[in-house]
Structures are given as C-alpha cells and as structure tokens.
Image (cartoon, rainbow, N blue to C red; front, side):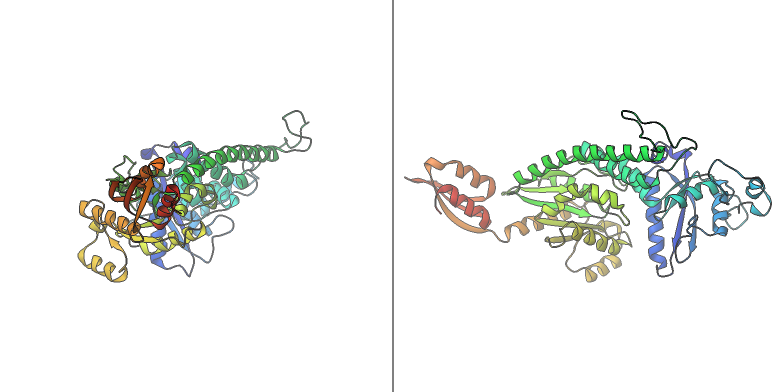
Length: 462
C-alpha cells in the first residue's frame, strides 16, 4: 500500500483530502490540520486536486463519510460512491444495478458553475486514522487507493530514511502499522499439511503472514538494539561535554540552524521530515569548553505511535541534552499548538524538565505588527531568522552564556608526573593563565564545578 504511493510520479498521481470535523473542534484548528495534510501530500509527491469534508460527531463506522458525502467523494475519483455488498471480488445478483447508473450515480464535484473536476484523483488521503474495514470500504466505493494520516507519515519516513538505524526504525513502525491490516486474499486455502518451515495443520494464510511478520519484526528489533547500544556508548563517551539539542515541530528550521551554528553540510529542504537521522556536530567557531549541537527528528500532530516507539532511541539525544533549543516557525499561525505538542512529546520521553530556550524562527517572514505582538506574548523567546548572520551570532552567544553561567575560577597545581591533566584542562575548561613552577604547572582555569572537581582529583589535590 505504501510502496504504490512512494513510487508514483507527482504529475501522474492526484489526491483528494478527506476530513471529518467533530462539533468541539474549532474551524481554525480543523483547517490547519487539513493544510498540514496537504503539505504531507506534497512532500510525498502528490498533487492535491480537491477535498471533501463533513461535520459529524465521529467518522462513519462503515466508510468514514455518510452516504451523500461518499458519493461526492466518488465524483472526484470516478467510483460508484456505494460500498458493494459481500466480500471483495464476489458479486451477488443485482449488485451491478446497484453500483451502476440510476439513482446511485456519484455526484460530480464542481467549482460552482457545474464544471467537472480538472483532474481525477487516484489517491484519497484521510486526515484521521482509519480502521482496516473503513479503508477497504472506501477503496471499494471510490476505486482509489486510501491512505490515512499515519500511512502518509510512514511513507514519508520510509522515503527519507537514509541511515541504517533510521531505515530499521521506519521498517519496524511500518510492519507494526500493517499487522492489524492483514487479511485473507483468497478462499479455499485455509488448511494445508505441515512441514519444516511451512504451515502447521490448520494454519491459514493469514496466520502464516502474521507469523512471518512477527519473526521479521523480532529480527529488526534485535539488529536495532545492537545499533542503539553503540549509540548509547557514544553518548556516554561524550557525557562530560556540554550538549545542545535542537527540537521542535517538523519543518521549523532545525536543520538550517544546525548548519548555521556548526558550519556542517546538514541536509536542508523545505519539506516535512527532511531530517530523520540524528546529527551531532561541534559549535563553530569552536568554544572552550567544546559544545556539541545535535539535530533531532521533528514532531507532528497525530504522529503514529509506532514511530514514536521506534524513534525513542533517536529522541534520547534530546533527553540527554544539557540545553534544549525549542524552535518554532513564527510565520505559521498554528505554531502555538505546535509548541504545546512538542512540549508534550518531550515530557513523554523524559525531557520535560530540561532547560529550554524558545526560539521563534523565520521572523523575517512576519510583518512588524505581528512581531510586536509576538514580543508581548512570548517575552522569554528569541525572535530570530537563520538568514540573518547577526541573529545566528545572538543565538550562539545565548548558548555560550547558558553554559558559562555556573562556571567558577580556580587555581590548580598539576604535578609534572601528571601532565595529562593539563591537556584535559585545556580541553574541558578555559585556561586563563599557565605557569611552570618547581613542583608542577599552575593553572588558573574557568569551568564547571564538576569538571574542576575531576581535574583536582586527577592532579591528586582532593
């Protein structure tokens, strides 16, 4: 299901959006969610040609939409707008009349002047998570492929995953999504004799597929666990170094700031989930002590639970950061809700109490009145643009100031027999003066209390 959309050409694959608005959801929030789904579609290479929405307490249990809206949706796809009776591939007498012309012809969407849609849609994108039966019924009624919000996000993750770790995480999440959606594809093959590696007596094709899926997930988890152990070892090795994690909603500008702060060639694209792999680089120009900056995967509303679980190890970079730089797109009217969602996810992974610096990014895209309003409403936030070198310098100074706020000065005499401590001091502290005496090297250093205690212990002065 995901592969078909992934390999489609943008100019030949058209999509129609489907949303259901419950009574308690404000219009602005509902419209924002649909706009975000349209951006997800464009990231996946789909062209959105229309949308069908309905106000109702909950999605229709059979096919998400009511009968009238289902026929309207079929007008975009060329389907019948009626869910056939009976299992797929089998028709009862009279079904042809029910699905054909007459009263059950699909409604043709128009632009208000009776015109037919300029493009037929062959993909339907749901702004919700559907059950397997709802998706199957929609496909049968419209003749188009149906992807719910989780399927779209999974397809994007699968396309953008580059490292082995990211590909494993996405594959585990994808198989977890597909597991409850497996179904029998044929009849008369429910029982066969057993054999080595084959089906046992009474094991159906569906059960065999599920067993293979469970075995595959177990293999992937074992391989991912080995990679995670290596990543954990790397994090422990740099545990004494100051670290900053860039966090925020997807497409908030994290990778652009990563490139600006570290001078690295991190991938920067104006699309959702362009970055899935965690990148760690040193702040540039390098400071003393050295500060590491990490770019993390972005968040999004209704992120599939399978992805949250699979990417938990990647999000550990945020949990282990000494400072979280929370980036938000100030030009997006929905950014307050995105801020709240990011805080919720940070709390879920155990990073809710970490020191946080809020940056309202892309401030160059807002007018003066909006900038003044943001300054009043978010007095503790930095209003910056990564395109402005002065703003990049401001954020760098704030990061340096955060790590220097608790630093203290101290004199340490290092015996000549323990000169390795001098090298450690230059790497972990700011050495203000250094002179050689009869018994050793006397250093005046400025650093954190924990680092100074370790240097004293190394010099044998505790």
